[in-house]
Structures are given as structure tokens and as C-alpha cells.
Length: 319
Ligand SMILES: O=C(O)CCC(=O)C(=O)O
Ligand SMILES: [Fe+2]
Image (cartoon, rainbow, N blue to C red; front, side, top):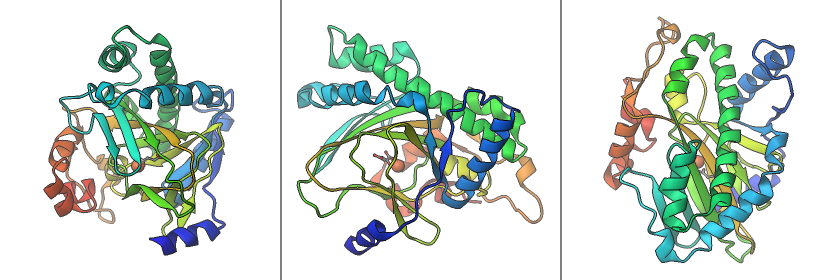
């Protein structure tokens, strides 16, 4: 672990950076077609890229302020936030570093307000709700653009409405305590995301690392005006393996806390994720069976299943 962390600090490889802020980024425009090609290339190679998106810059400060306010609450307040669904609610503090809160349908105002904010602040906290909502709607808007580009790049845009109708935007906000050492310390173990597409934004404390096809770890140093965009296993499966979902981890050093926010586009329960017939032929046999993401999560939530499945979703639904 230490060895590869050292290697990563020396590697000059950088994630592709794609300007996604252009005013007229409308389907069919020249800019759209250009960005679409860049997105497809980056995802093919890394399953991931840095999307410059000016509008997120001004949200940075209020967002980090909201996360500080949230994680500074007493533990007995934070643990009031629970959910009957797996992988939602409050997690932590996990030794030694990590806490997080996860909420469903984070782009829906009433949901954020009633299910999260009012539980933590019974007297209300509208600026907190508004800040989280602004982040979720900005990120989900960009996610839609990117999803459309990906689908178009495979000639599969006719599935776009179905994709959007079945999407649940989950927000996960995270705090990693600084370990007070210059030795890289694990904040999040190496994993690939199991959902469709992930968009990440962080404060100035770096730590995210992405593994390349060659097994090298890239240190991600995002601009404050960007999102890191990553393909999850669900989309990789839907595309019959055509795009990779990258392995990544978080390594923390130093004294400052790292805050990050992730918008996870997932598939609602009751919808099957099924490889489109256009991607299956003699040369490309069907690799994955249709699955329900929420059923998968239920199954995956037990320690034993995680051990048995190893790589997660792909093992669960492989033909
Ligand atoms: O904190 C980050 O930047 C990444 C977190 C992550 O990989 C995850 O929540 O799946
Ligand atoms: Fe992740």
C-alpha cells in the first residue's frame, strides 16, 4: 500500500480535463459534438475525467460551510438521521477518519428538507437545505448532459427517457479527519462505485486516487471549478462492459479535514437494468443478466455477500 502510494505521487499522469461549461452546450451543436467525443475517449481510457464547470465555483464556499455545520453537530443529533433503506443514513465516525450522510432523491426540495434538515434541526435550517439542493441540482443537470452524450456516442439515445425516468439522485456528503501525519492514511478503501454515474466535488484537501488500466494510481487534484465524473458498475454493465468503471480510493495526509460531496446517479427500485439488444451480437455476447439495483444493494449489504462477490455488481449479475 505504502509503495503504491509513493509511486502515485511520482506519476505524471493526469486525468483528462474537459470543459463542460460552454454556454451553448446543446444537443447537436458543434460544441456538443466536440465535448461528446472527448467524454467518450476519456471514459474509454480511464472511466473517469475532470469536468470543468464554472457554476460550481461559487457554490464551493457555502457547500463546505454547510458540511462543517453538519458534521460539527453532536453525535447524538447526527445519529437521529436514519433510514429504513440500506446504505442510507448517517455513517460514522469510522475509525480513524471517516463520517458520511446519504440521502435519496437529493434534487427534490421536500425530501432534503423533511427527511434530512428537519431531523437534524427541528427548528429548521433553510440555508442548509438550499445549499445542498443547489449542489444536487447543478450536479444532476451536468450528469444528464453527460449521460446523454454517452448514450449518443453508442447510438443509444432512444433509451435516454427511460434512463432519466428511472434515476434516483443520491447525495453523499463526507468528512475525512486529517490524520496529523505526512504518511498517507486510508480514508476510503479501493473500490469501484456500483451505481450508474458519480460526480464528486471536494474542498482544497486532495486525496482521491484513481487506478489506470496499467494499475498505476493517479493523484486527482481537481480545480475548485470542477467535478470529477466517474462511471459506476451499473452503467458499465448496461453497456455490456464497453466502458470501464474505475477502481479508486482516498488517501489522506496532513492536519486539515477533507470534505467531499458525491452525487450518485442510481437506478430506482422496480426498474431492471438490462443490456440493450443493440450491444449484443456474435462478436459481443451478452455478459450480464438484467438486475434491480435496490435488490442488489439489499443483497450486497451483508458482509458475507460482499466477501463472496468480490467485485460486486458484475459478479452478482454475470451470465
Ligand atoms: O471522497 C471522495 O472523493 C470519494 C468518495 C468515494 O469514492 C465514494 O463515496 O464512493
Ligand atoms: Fe467511490
